[in-house]
Amino acid sequence: MIELHEKIDVPRPVREAFDYVKDFRSTREWDATASAVEKLSAGAVEVGTRFRVTCDMPVGSVDLLYTVTHLEQDKSIELHGTCRLFEVTDVIHFSTSATGTHIDYRASFSFHVPLGPTVAALRKGMEKMGFESVQGLKAALEDDYPAPAISAGNARADRWVLPGIARFSRRGYTLGKRHWNPMSAWMGDKHAVITGATSGLGLATAQSLAERGAALTLVIRNESRAQELVNTLQRETGNPNISVEIADLSLMSEVERLVERLLRTGRPIDILVNNAGALFNERTLTPEGLEQSFALLLLSPYRLTEGLKPLLLAAPQARVINVVSGGMYTQPLKVRWLQAREENYSGSVAYARCKRALMVLTEQWAEAWEDEGVVVNAMHPGWADTPGVESALPGFHRITRRILRSPEEGADTIVWLAVATEAGKASGELFLDREPRTPHLLRKTEGDATERDALQPYLDSVTAAKKRKTPAKRRSGARKQAATAG
Ligand SMILES: NC(=O)c1ccc[n+]([C@@H]2O[C@H](COP(=O)([O-])OP(=O)(O)OC[C@H]3O[C@@H](n4cnc5c(N)ncnc54)[C@H](OP(=O)(O)O)[C@@H]3O)[C@@H](O)[C@H]2O)c1
Image (cartoon, rainbow, N blue to C red; front, side, top):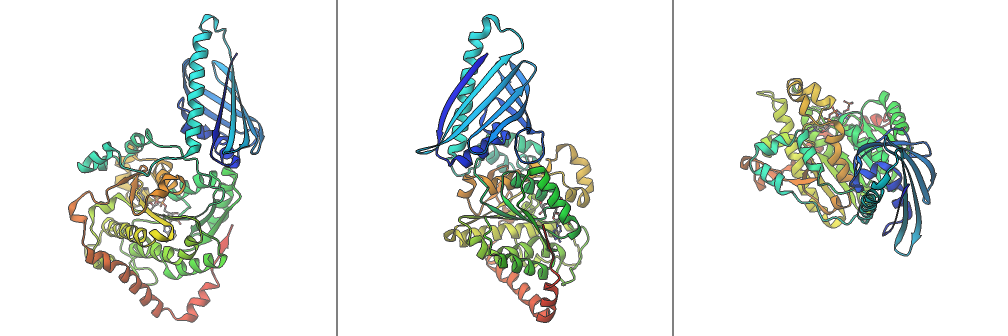
Protein backbone atom coordinates (compact mmCIF):
# COMPACT_ATOMS: atom_id res chain seq x y z
CA MET A 1 0.00 0.00 0.00
CA ILE A 2 1.28 3.47 -0.90
CA GLU A 3 -0.45 6.44 0.71
CA LEU A 4 -0.21 10.03 -0.47
CA HIS A 5 -1.40 12.97 1.60
CA GLU A 6 -1.41 16.58 0.43
CA LYS A 7 -3.03 19.74 1.79
CA ILE A 8 -3.64 23.06 0.06
CA ASP A 9 -5.41 26.34 0.75
CA VAL A 10 -7.11 28.12 -2.10
CA PRO A 11 -8.71 31.58 -2.28
CA ARG A 12 -12.13 30.32 -3.36
CA PRO A 13 -15.43 29.69 -1.56
CA VAL A 14 -15.88 26.02 -0.60
CA ARG A 15 -18.79 25.64 -3.01
CA GLU A 16 -16.69 26.68 -6.00
CA ALA A 17 -13.72 24.51 -5.06
CA PHE A 18 -15.97 21.54 -4.37
CA ASP A 19 -17.95 21.81 -7.61
CA TYR A 20 -14.77 22.09 -9.66
CA VAL A 21 -13.21 18.99 -8.12
CA LYS A 22 -16.34 16.85 -7.94
CA ASP A 23 -16.65 16.75 -11.70
CA PHE A 24 -13.55 14.62 -12.00
CA ARG A 25 -13.16 15.61 -15.65
CA SER A 26 -11.36 18.62 -14.20
CA THR A 27 -8.36 16.34 -13.46
CA ARG A 28 -7.50 16.75 -17.15
CA GLU A 29 -6.79 20.41 -16.36
CA TRP A 30 -4.83 20.11 -13.12
CA ASP A 31 -3.32 16.62 -12.92
CA ALA A 32 -0.37 16.45 -15.31
CA THR A 33 -0.60 12.63 -15.32
CA ALA A 34 -4.21 12.63 -16.64
CA SER A 35 -3.98 12.66 -20.42
CA ALA A 36 -7.68 12.00 -21.11
CA VAL A 37 -10.83 11.94 -18.98
CA GLU A 38 -14.35 10.88 -19.81
CA LYS A 39 -17.53 10.98 -17.73
CA LEU A 40 -19.22 7.64 -18.26
CA SER A 41 -22.51 8.35 -16.46
CA ALA A 42 -25.20 10.82 -17.52
CA GLY A 43 -26.61 13.42 -15.15
CA ALA A 44 -25.29 15.30 -12.14
CA VAL A 45 -22.23 13.96 -10.32
CA GLU A 46 -23.49 11.79 -7.44
CA VAL A 47 -22.69 8.52 -5.71
CA GLY A 48 -22.29 5.95 -8.48
CA THR A 49 -21.10 8.40 -11.18
CA ARG A 50 -18.24 6.86 -13.16
CA PHE A 51 -15.24 8.41 -14.91
CA ARG A 52 -12.50 6.96 -17.08
CA VAL A 53 -9.14 8.66 -16.48
CA THR A 54 -6.17 7.76 -18.67
CA CYS A 55 -3.05 8.35 -16.57
CA ASP A 56 0.60 8.42 -17.54
CA MET A 57 2.22 7.11 -14.36
CA PRO A 58 5.69 5.91 -13.31
CA VAL A 59 4.33 2.36 -13.83
CA GLY A 60 3.14 3.12 -17.40
CA SER A 61 -0.06 4.43 -19.01
CA VAL A 62 -3.21 3.10 -17.36
CA ASP A 63 -6.95 3.49 -17.81
CA LEU A 64 -8.43 4.06 -14.38
CA LEU A 65 -12.14 3.48 -13.92
CA TYR A 66 -13.29 5.72 -11.09
CA THR A 67 -16.61 5.51 -9.25
CA VAL A 68 -17.85 8.13 -6.79
CA THR A 69 -18.45 6.14 -3.59
CA HIS A 70 -19.32 8.97 -1.20
CA LEU A 71 -20.36 12.58 -1.76
CA GLU A 72 -21.34 15.15 0.83
CA GLN A 73 -21.85 18.47 -0.97
CA ASP A 74 -19.25 21.08 0.01
CA LYS A 75 -17.65 18.72 2.53
CA SER A 76 -16.12 15.58 1.08
CA ILE A 77 -15.96 13.32 -1.91
CA GLU A 78 -14.56 9.82 -2.13
CA LEU A 79 -13.75 7.97 -5.35
CA HIS A 80 -12.60 4.43 -5.89
CA GLY A 81 -10.45 3.75 -8.95
CA THR A 82 -9.44 0.48 -10.46
CA CYS A 83 -7.08 -0.53 -13.28
CA ARG A 84 -5.03 -3.53 -14.36
CA LEU A 85 -2.19 -2.64 -11.95
CA PHE A 86 -3.77 -1.28 -8.79
CA GLU A 87 -6.79 -0.03 -6.86
CA VAL A 88 -6.86 3.53 -5.56
CA THR A 89 -9.12 5.34 -3.14
CA ASP A 90 -9.14 9.16 -3.25
CA VAL A 91 -10.64 10.91 -0.21
CA ILE A 92 -10.91 14.68 -0.52
CA HIS A 93 -12.14 16.89 2.33
CA PHE A 94 -13.09 20.55 1.96
CA SER A 95 -13.42 23.05 4.82
CA THR A 96 -13.68 26.82 5.13
CA SER A 97 -10.39 28.54 5.91
CA ALA A 98 -9.41 32.12 6.66
CA THR A 99 -8.53 32.69 3.01
CA GLY A 100 -11.13 30.51 1.32
CA THR A 101 -11.02 26.74 1.28
CA HIS A 102 -8.73 24.17 2.85
CA ILE A 103 -8.47 20.95 0.80
CA ASP A 104 -7.13 17.77 2.33
CA TYR A 105 -6.37 15.14 -0.35
CA ARG A 106 -5.49 11.52 0.43
CA ALA A 107 -4.91 8.78 -2.13
CA SER A 108 -4.25 5.15 -1.10
CA PHE A 109 -2.92 2.75 -3.73
CA SER A 110 -2.89 -1.04 -3.33
CA PHE A 111 -1.14 -2.96 -6.09
CA HIS A 112 -2.33 -6.22 -7.61
CA VAL A 113 1.20 -7.64 -7.71
CA PRO A 114 3.84 -7.65 -4.96
CA LEU A 115 6.18 -4.69 -5.46
CA GLY A 116 9.22 -6.19 -3.72
CA PRO A 117 12.34 -4.04 -3.59
CA THR A 118 10.94 -1.51 -6.12
CA VAL A 119 8.46 -0.16 -3.59
CA ALA A 120 10.72 2.59 -2.20
CA ALA A 121 11.52 4.04 -5.65
CA LEU A 122 7.89 3.74 -6.70
CA ARG A 123 6.70 5.48 -3.52
CA LYS A 124 9.10 8.35 -4.18
CA GLY A 125 7.92 8.74 -7.77
CA MET A 126 4.29 8.64 -6.75
CA GLU A 127 4.79 11.13 -3.93
CA LYS A 128 6.32 13.54 -6.40
CA MET A 129 3.44 12.94 -8.78
CA GLY A 130 0.87 13.47 -5.99
CA PHE A 131 2.52 16.70 -4.87
CA GLU A 132 2.63 18.09 -8.41
CA SER A 133 -0.98 17.14 -9.12
CA VAL A 134 -2.31 18.86 -6.02
CA GLN A 135 -0.18 21.93 -6.73
CA GLY A 136 -1.79 21.87 -10.20
CA LEU A 137 -5.20 21.89 -8.49
CA LYS A 138 -4.10 24.85 -6.36
CA ALA A 139 -3.04 26.81 -9.46
CA ALA A 140 -6.31 25.91 -11.22
CA LEU A 141 -8.39 27.19 -8.30
CA GLU A 142 -6.25 30.31 -7.85
CA ASP A 143 -7.28 31.01 -11.43
CA ASP A 144 -4.90 33.92 -11.82
CA TYR A 145 -3.87 33.69 -15.45
CA PRO A 146 -2.77 36.65 -17.58
CA ALA A 147 -4.88 38.21 -20.32
CA PRO A 148 -4.88 36.01 -23.42
CA ALA A 149 -2.16 36.57 -26.01
CA ILE A 150 -1.28 34.95 -29.31
CA SER A 151 1.47 32.32 -29.22
CA ALA A 152 4.58 32.74 -31.34
CA GLY A 153 3.63 29.66 -33.41
CA ASN A 154 0.17 30.95 -34.34
CA ALA A 155 1.46 34.50 -35.00
CA ARG A 156 4.02 33.02 -37.40
CA ALA A 157 1.42 30.79 -39.07
CA ASP A 158 -0.95 33.76 -39.56
CA ARG A 159 1.84 35.87 -41.08
CA TRP A 160 2.37 33.16 -43.70
CA VAL A 161 -1.45 33.01 -44.28
CA LEU A 162 -1.73 29.41 -45.57
CA PRO A 163 -0.21 27.80 -42.44
CA GLY A 164 -2.65 29.96 -40.44
CA ILE A 165 -5.59 28.67 -42.50
CA ALA A 166 -4.31 25.09 -42.14
CA ARG A 167 -4.86 25.49 -38.39
CA PHE A 168 -8.62 25.81 -38.97
CA SER A 169 -8.45 22.00 -39.11
CA ARG A 170 -8.40 19.72 -36.06
CA ARG A 171 -4.62 20.11 -35.99
CA GLY A 172 -4.95 23.73 -34.80
CA TYR A 173 -7.07 22.55 -31.89
CA THR A 174 -4.64 19.74 -31.02
CA LEU A 175 -1.65 22.09 -31.12
CA GLY A 176 -3.47 24.79 -29.15
CA LYS A 177 -4.71 22.65 -26.31
CA ARG A 178 -1.20 21.77 -25.18
CA HIS A 179 -0.89 25.23 -23.66
CA TRP A 180 -4.34 25.91 -22.28
CA ASN A 181 -5.03 26.97 -18.72
CA PRO A 182 -7.64 25.34 -16.49
CA MET A 183 -11.14 26.86 -16.45
CA SER A 184 -12.33 26.69 -12.85
CA ALA A 185 -14.68 29.71 -12.83
CA TRP A 186 -17.94 28.85 -11.07
CA MET A 187 -20.93 29.18 -13.40
CA GLY A 188 -23.73 28.37 -10.93
CA ASP A 189 -24.81 32.03 -10.78
CA LYS A 190 -24.54 32.74 -14.51
CA HIS A 191 -27.33 33.03 -17.07
CA ALA A 192 -26.41 32.36 -20.69
CA VAL A 193 -28.57 33.00 -23.76
CA ILE A 194 -27.46 30.90 -26.74
CA THR A 195 -28.95 31.23 -30.22
CA GLY A 196 -29.05 28.25 -32.59
CA ALA A 197 -28.77 25.63 -29.86
CA THR A 198 -30.41 22.71 -31.68
CA SER A 199 -27.29 21.38 -33.39
CA GLY A 200 -23.58 21.78 -34.11
CA LEU A 201 -21.65 24.38 -32.17
CA GLY A 202 -24.67 25.85 -30.37
CA LEU A 203 -25.70 22.47 -29.00
CA ALA A 204 -22.13 21.64 -27.92
CA THR A 205 -21.91 25.04 -26.18
CA ALA A 206 -25.24 24.48 -24.43
CA GLN A 207 -24.14 21.05 -23.24
CA SER A 208 -20.84 22.30 -21.85
CA LEU A 209 -22.29 25.37 -20.11
CA ALA A 210 -25.10 23.26 -18.64
CA GLU A 211 -22.54 20.79 -17.28
CA ARG A 212 -20.79 23.70 -15.62
CA GLY A 213 -24.02 24.69 -13.87
CA ALA A 214 -25.02 27.83 -15.81
CA ALA A 215 -28.73 28.57 -16.29
CA LEU A 216 -29.52 28.54 -20.00
CA THR A 217 -32.02 30.20 -22.26
CA LEU A 218 -31.81 28.50 -25.63
CA VAL A 219 -33.17 30.34 -28.64
CA ILE A 220 -34.42 27.99 -31.34
CA ARG A 221 -36.88 28.37 -34.18
CA ASN A 222 -38.60 25.01 -34.18
CA GLU A 223 -41.09 24.70 -31.34
CA SER A 224 -41.60 20.97 -31.86
CA ARG A 225 -37.96 20.35 -30.91
CA ALA A 226 -38.02 22.42 -27.73
CA GLN A 227 -39.18 19.88 -25.18
CA GLU A 228 -36.95 17.10 -26.43
CA LEU A 229 -33.94 19.42 -26.45
CA VAL A 230 -34.57 20.51 -22.87
CA ASN A 231 -35.23 16.94 -21.70
CA THR A 232 -32.05 15.61 -23.32
CA LEU A 233 -29.84 18.37 -21.94
CA GLN A 234 -31.35 18.06 -18.48
CA ARG A 235 -30.94 14.28 -18.47
CA GLU A 236 -27.36 14.37 -19.74
CA THR A 237 -26.09 17.23 -17.59
CA GLY A 238 -28.31 17.03 -14.51
CA ASN A 239 -28.92 20.78 -14.85
CA PRO A 240 -32.62 21.67 -14.37
CA ASN A 241 -32.20 25.37 -15.26
CA ILE A 242 -32.70 25.17 -18.99
CA SER A 243 -35.47 26.92 -20.86
CA VAL A 244 -36.25 27.63 -24.49
CA GLU A 245 -37.43 30.67 -26.42
CA ILE A 246 -38.84 30.23 -29.89
CA ALA A 247 -37.83 32.70 -32.60
CA ASP A 248 -37.01 32.54 -36.28
CA LEU A 249 -34.03 34.87 -36.14
CA SER A 250 -34.16 35.70 -39.83
CA LEU A 251 -37.39 37.61 -39.10
CA MET A 252 -36.86 40.91 -37.36
CA SER A 253 -40.42 40.91 -36.02
CA GLU A 254 -39.56 37.69 -34.17
CA VAL A 255 -36.23 39.05 -32.97
CA GLU A 256 -38.07 42.07 -31.57
CA ARG A 257 -40.66 39.93 -29.82
CA LEU A 258 -37.92 37.77 -28.36
CA VAL A 259 -36.21 40.88 -27.01
CA GLU A 260 -39.49 42.10 -25.53
CA ARG A 261 -40.12 38.76 -23.82
CA LEU A 262 -36.62 38.58 -22.35
CA LEU A 263 -36.75 42.22 -21.20
CA ARG A 264 -40.06 41.53 -19.47
CA THR A 265 -38.43 38.82 -17.34
CA GLY A 266 -35.88 41.38 -16.13
CA ARG A 267 -33.40 38.52 -15.75
CA PRO A 268 -29.79 39.69 -16.17
CA ILE A 269 -27.82 38.04 -18.98
CA ASP A 270 -24.21 37.19 -18.15
CA ILE A 271 -23.44 35.56 -21.49
CA LEU A 272 -25.01 36.13 -24.89
CA VAL A 273 -23.82 33.77 -27.63
CA ASN A 274 -24.82 34.96 -31.11
CA ASN A 275 -24.31 31.61 -32.80
CA ALA A 276 -27.34 30.86 -35.04
CA GLY A 277 -26.34 30.89 -38.67
CA ALA A 278 -26.38 29.22 -42.03
CA LEU A 279 -24.82 29.57 -45.45
CA PHE A 280 -27.49 29.96 -48.13
CA ASN A 281 -26.50 28.70 -51.56
CA GLU A 282 -29.63 30.26 -53.12
CA ARG A 283 -30.40 33.93 -52.77
CA THR A 284 -33.72 34.30 -50.97
CA LEU A 285 -35.63 37.18 -49.50
CA THR A 286 -37.27 36.69 -46.12
CA PRO A 287 -41.04 37.36 -45.87
CA GLU A 288 -39.96 40.78 -44.56
CA GLY A 289 -38.12 41.48 -47.83
CA LEU A 290 -34.55 41.23 -46.48
CA GLU A 291 -31.81 39.17 -48.10
CA GLN A 292 -31.65 36.06 -45.94
CA SER A 293 -27.90 35.93 -45.10
CA PHE A 294 -27.98 39.58 -44.09
CA ALA A 295 -31.09 39.10 -41.96
CA LEU A 296 -29.89 36.02 -40.08
CA LEU A 297 -26.14 36.58 -39.84
CA LEU A 298 -25.99 40.31 -39.25
CA LEU A 299 -29.16 42.26 -38.62
CA SER A 300 -30.47 39.63 -36.21
CA PRO A 301 -27.45 39.57 -33.83
CA TYR A 302 -27.29 43.37 -34.10
CA ARG A 303 -30.93 43.85 -33.07
CA LEU A 304 -30.76 41.13 -30.45
CA THR A 305 -27.61 42.43 -28.77
CA GLU A 306 -28.71 46.07 -28.87
CA GLY A 307 -32.17 45.11 -27.61
CA LEU A 308 -30.84 42.99 -24.75
CA LYS A 309 -28.32 45.57 -23.61
CA PRO A 310 -30.31 46.51 -20.46
CA LEU A 311 -30.10 42.86 -19.35
CA LEU A 312 -26.39 42.69 -20.20
CA LEU A 313 -25.83 45.83 -18.13
CA ALA A 314 -27.75 44.27 -15.25
CA ALA A 315 -25.15 41.46 -15.01
CA PRO A 316 -21.90 42.14 -13.10
CA GLN A 317 -19.65 41.66 -16.15
CA ALA A 318 -21.55 40.46 -19.18
CA ARG A 319 -19.87 38.77 -22.10
CA VAL A 320 -21.14 38.85 -25.68
CA ILE A 321 -19.71 36.20 -27.98
CA ASN A 322 -20.22 36.56 -31.70
CA VAL A 323 -19.61 33.46 -33.79
CA VAL A 324 -18.03 34.61 -37.05
CA SER A 325 -16.13 32.57 -39.62
CA GLY A 326 -12.70 32.21 -41.17
CA GLY A 327 -14.55 32.94 -44.43
CA MET A 328 -14.57 36.63 -43.45
CA TYR A 329 -10.82 36.71 -44.14
CA THR A 330 -11.71 36.93 -47.83
CA GLN A 331 -13.93 40.02 -47.59
CA PRO A 332 -13.63 43.67 -46.55
CA LEU A 333 -16.53 45.60 -45.06
CA LYS A 334 -18.53 47.31 -47.79
CA VAL A 335 -21.86 48.43 -46.44
CA ARG A 336 -23.54 48.60 -49.83
CA TRP A 337 -22.66 44.93 -50.44
CA LEU A 338 -24.25 43.65 -47.24
CA GLN A 339 -27.57 42.73 -48.81
CA ALA A 340 -26.38 40.56 -51.68
CA ARG A 341 -28.00 41.37 -55.02
CA GLU A 342 -29.41 38.88 -57.52
CA GLU A 343 -26.63 39.19 -60.10
CA ASN A 344 -23.58 36.94 -59.41
CA TYR A 345 -24.96 35.80 -56.04
CA SER A 346 -22.56 33.56 -54.16
CA GLY A 347 -23.69 32.11 -50.83
CA SER A 348 -20.10 31.93 -49.51
CA VAL A 349 -19.42 35.57 -50.40
CA ALA A 350 -22.70 36.84 -48.92
CA TYR A 351 -21.96 34.81 -45.78
CA ALA A 352 -18.37 36.07 -45.52
CA ARG A 353 -19.41 39.71 -45.90
CA CYS A 354 -21.97 39.45 -43.12
CA LYS A 355 -19.46 37.71 -40.83
CA ARG A 356 -16.92 40.48 -41.57
CA ALA A 357 -19.54 43.05 -40.61
CA LEU A 358 -20.31 41.15 -37.38
CA MET A 359 -16.59 41.27 -36.59
CA VAL A 360 -16.62 45.05 -37.08
CA LEU A 361 -19.67 45.32 -34.80
CA THR A 362 -17.74 43.29 -32.21
CA GLU A 363 -14.93 45.84 -32.27
CA GLN A 364 -17.33 48.78 -32.15
CA TRP A 365 -19.42 47.40 -29.27
CA ALA A 366 -16.26 46.52 -27.33
CA GLU A 367 -15.05 50.10 -27.57
CA ALA A 368 -18.40 51.72 -26.89
CA TRP A 369 -19.28 49.49 -23.93
CA GLU A 370 -15.85 49.33 -22.32
CA ASP A 371 -16.84 51.60 -19.43
CA GLU A 372 -20.16 49.84 -18.97
CA GLY A 373 -18.65 46.51 -18.00
CA VAL A 374 -19.73 44.51 -21.06
CA VAL A 375 -17.00 42.67 -22.93
CA VAL A 376 -17.62 41.68 -26.54
CA ASN A 377 -15.50 39.21 -28.46
CA ALA A 378 -15.79 37.24 -31.66
CA MET A 379 -14.57 33.75 -32.31
CA HIS A 380 -14.35 31.51 -35.29
CA PRO A 381 -14.49 27.79 -34.82
CA GLY A 382 -12.10 26.74 -37.55
CA TRP A 383 -13.67 23.99 -39.66
CA ALA A 384 -16.06 21.85 -37.63
CA ASP A 385 -18.09 18.87 -38.73
CA THR A 386 -21.63 20.09 -38.11
CA PRO A 387 -24.96 19.54 -39.89
CA GLY A 388 -24.68 23.12 -41.22
CA VAL A 389 -21.36 22.46 -42.97
CA GLU A 390 -22.48 19.09 -44.30
CA SER A 391 -25.66 20.48 -45.88
CA ALA A 392 -24.35 23.84 -47.16
CA LEU A 393 -20.91 22.70 -48.33
CA PRO A 394 -21.24 18.99 -49.22
CA GLY A 395 -18.15 18.97 -51.48
CA PHE A 396 -15.97 20.68 -48.88
CA HIS A 397 -17.33 18.35 -46.21
CA ARG A 398 -16.57 15.23 -48.26
CA ILE A 399 -12.99 16.26 -48.98
CA THR A 400 -12.10 17.58 -45.53
CA ARG A 401 -14.11 15.21 -43.32
CA ARG A 402 -11.02 13.58 -41.83
CA ILE A 403 -9.46 16.84 -40.70
CA LEU A 404 -12.59 18.58 -39.45
CA ARG A 405 -12.98 19.33 -35.78
CA SER A 406 -15.78 17.75 -33.78
CA PRO A 407 -18.62 20.16 -32.80
CA GLU A 408 -17.20 20.15 -29.23
CA GLU A 409 -13.75 21.12 -30.51
CA GLY A 410 -15.27 23.82 -32.72
CA ALA A 411 -17.31 25.14 -29.78
CA ASP A 412 -14.41 25.04 -27.33
CA THR A 413 -13.47 28.70 -27.77
CA ILE A 414 -17.11 29.80 -27.34
CA VAL A 415 -17.19 27.95 -24.01
CA TRP A 416 -13.81 29.35 -23.02
CA LEU A 417 -14.92 32.92 -23.84
CA ALA A 418 -18.02 32.35 -21.71
CA VAL A 419 -16.28 30.72 -18.75
CA ALA A 420 -12.56 31.47 -18.41
CA THR A 421 -11.66 34.26 -16.01
CA GLU A 422 -8.85 35.49 -18.24
CA ALA A 423 -11.17 35.64 -21.25
CA GLY A 424 -13.01 38.46 -19.44
CA LYS A 425 -9.80 40.51 -19.66
CA ALA A 426 -10.09 40.82 -23.46
CA SER A 427 -12.64 42.73 -25.53
CA GLY A 428 -13.04 43.51 -29.20
CA GLU A 429 -10.84 40.60 -30.27
CA LEU A 430 -11.22 37.66 -32.62
CA PHE A 431 -10.34 34.29 -31.09
CA LEU A 432 -9.48 30.88 -32.44
CA ASP A 433 -8.36 28.10 -30.12
CA ARG A 434 -8.46 30.42 -27.10
CA GLU A 435 -5.94 32.85 -28.62
CA PRO A 436 -6.57 36.30 -30.05
CA ARG A 437 -5.94 36.21 -33.78
CA THR A 438 -5.63 38.83 -36.42
CA PRO A 439 -8.98 39.91 -37.93
CA HIS A 440 -7.19 40.38 -41.27
CA LEU A 441 -4.95 37.85 -42.98
CA LEU A 442 -4.90 40.00 -46.15
CA ARG A 443 -4.34 43.75 -46.47
CA LYS A 444 -7.21 44.00 -48.96
CA THR A 445 -9.83 43.30 -46.25
CA GLU A 446 -8.76 46.05 -43.87
CA GLY A 447 -11.36 48.49 -45.21
CA ASP A 448 -11.68 52.09 -44.19
CA ALA A 449 -13.17 54.22 -41.45
CA THR A 450 -15.99 55.55 -43.68
CA GLU A 451 -17.39 52.05 -44.15
CA ARG A 452 -17.07 51.27 -40.46
CA ASP A 453 -18.81 54.51 -39.49
CA ALA A 454 -21.61 53.78 -41.94
CA LEU A 455 -22.34 50.26 -40.64
CA GLN A 456 -24.56 50.89 -37.62
CA PRO A 457 -26.48 53.79 -39.23
CA TYR A 458 -27.21 51.44 -42.15
CA LEU A 459 -28.45 48.66 -39.87
CA ASP A 460 -30.58 51.18 -37.98
CA SER A 461 -32.00 52.55 -41.21
CA VAL A 462 -32.99 49.08 -42.43
CA THR A 463 -34.66 48.42 -39.08
CA ALA A 464 -36.51 51.74 -39.16
CA ALA A 465 -37.69 51.12 -42.73
CA LYS A 466 -39.02 47.67 -41.75
CA LYS A 467 -40.85 49.12 -38.77
CA ARG A 468 -42.49 51.78 -40.95
CA LYS A 469 -43.74 49.06 -43.29
CA THR A 470 -45.15 46.87 -40.45
CA PRO A 471 -48.37 48.44 -39.11
CA ALA A 472 -48.49 48.53 -35.29
CA LYS A 473 -51.68 46.43 -35.26
CA ARG A 474 -50.03 43.56 -37.17
CA ARG A 475 -47.02 43.67 -34.89
CA SER A 476 -49.05 43.38 -31.69
CA GLY A 477 -51.25 40.63 -33.15
CA ALA A 478 -48.23 38.57 -34.03
CA ARG A 479 -46.79 39.12 -30.55
CA LYS A 480 -49.59 37.08 -29.06
CA GLN A 481 -48.47 34.04 -31.01
CA ALA A 482 -45.02 34.05 -29.41
CA ALA A 483 -44.33 30.73 -27.81
CA THR A 484 -42.06 29.73 -24.98
CA ALA A 485 -41.31 26.31 -23.63
CA GLY A 486 -39.03 24.77 -21.06
N1 LIG B 1 -19.09 24.50 -38.52
C1 LIG B 1 -18.13 25.29 -38.99
O1 LIG B 1 -17.08 24.83 -39.46
C2 LIG B 1 -18.32 26.77 -38.92
C3 LIG B 1 -17.27 27.55 -39.42
C4 LIG B 1 -17.38 28.93 -39.32
C5 LIG B 1 -18.49 29.50 -38.73
N2 LIG B 1 -19.50 28.72 -38.28
C6 LIG B 1 -20.65 29.39 -37.66
O2 LIG B 1 -21.01 28.70 -36.50
C7 LIG B 1 -22.39 28.92 -36.21
C8 LIG B 1 -23.05 27.59 -35.93
O3 LIG B 1 -23.02 26.80 -37.11
P1 LIG B 1 -22.94 25.22 -37.12
O4 LIG B 1 -21.79 24.85 -37.96
O5 LIG B 1 -23.03 24.72 -35.73
O6 LIG B 1 -24.24 24.89 -37.95
P2 LIG B 1 -25.59 24.09 -37.62
O7 LIG B 1 -25.26 22.78 -37.04
O8 LIG B 1 -26.39 24.14 -38.87
O9 LIG B 1 -26.28 24.99 -36.51
C9 LIG B 1 -26.86 26.21 -36.83
C10 LIG B 1 -27.88 26.58 -35.77
O10 LIG B 1 -28.47 27.82 -36.15
C11 LIG B 1 -29.88 27.66 -36.15
N3 LIG B 1 -30.58 28.50 -37.11
C12 LIG B 1 -30.40 28.55 -38.46
N4 LIG B 1 -31.27 29.41 -39.00
C13 LIG B 1 -32.00 29.93 -37.98
C14 LIG B 1 -33.07 30.86 -37.89
N5 LIG B 1 -33.59 31.44 -38.99
N6 LIG B 1 -33.59 31.15 -36.68
C15 LIG B 1 -33.12 30.55 -35.57
N7 LIG B 1 -32.11 29.65 -35.59
C16 LIG B 1 -31.57 29.35 -36.78
C17 LIG B 1 -30.09 26.20 -36.50
O11 LIG B 1 -31.41 25.81 -36.16
P3 LIG B 1 -32.20 24.63 -36.94
O12 LIG B 1 -31.77 23.36 -36.28
O13 LIG B 1 -33.63 24.96 -36.72
O14 LIG B 1 -31.79 24.71 -38.37
C18 LIG B 1 -29.01 25.56 -35.66
O15 LIG B 1 -29.42 25.47 -34.32
C19 LIG B 1 -22.95 29.65 -37.42
O16 LIG B 1 -23.03 31.02 -37.13
C20 LIG B 1 -21.92 29.40 -38.50
O17 LIG B 1 -21.89 30.44 -39.44
C21 LIG B 1 -19.42 27.37 -38.37
